[in-house]
Image (tube, rainbow, N blue to C red; front, side, top):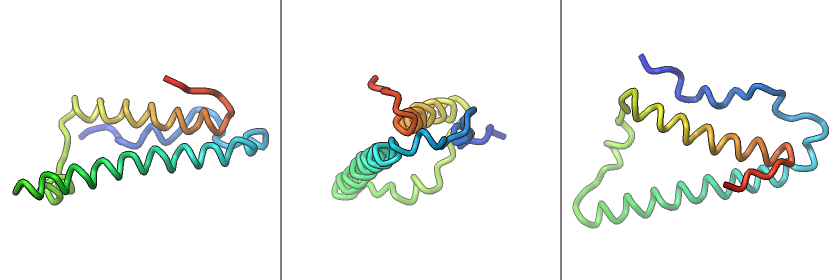
Length: 95
C-alpha cells in the first residue's frame, strides 16, 4: 500500500498563528491562482484530447499511480502546500 498521498497536508508547525492573519488573504489568492491554473490546463487538455477522439476523463478518475510516480506527486504537492503555507506566514517562496 502506498503511503497517504495527502501527508503533506499536515505541516510541522501550527498552520495559522494570530500573527499570520494579515497574510491570509494573500494565501487564499495564491491558492485560488494555483488551483485555477491546474483546473484550466486540465480542462483544455481533456477538451483537445476528446476532440482528437481520445476521451481520458474516466481513465483519469480511475488511475492509480505506482509507488515511484506517487512519490513524484507527493513532492509536487509538498511544493504547492509549502508555497501556500509560506504565503500565510509572510515568507516569500519565489522559486
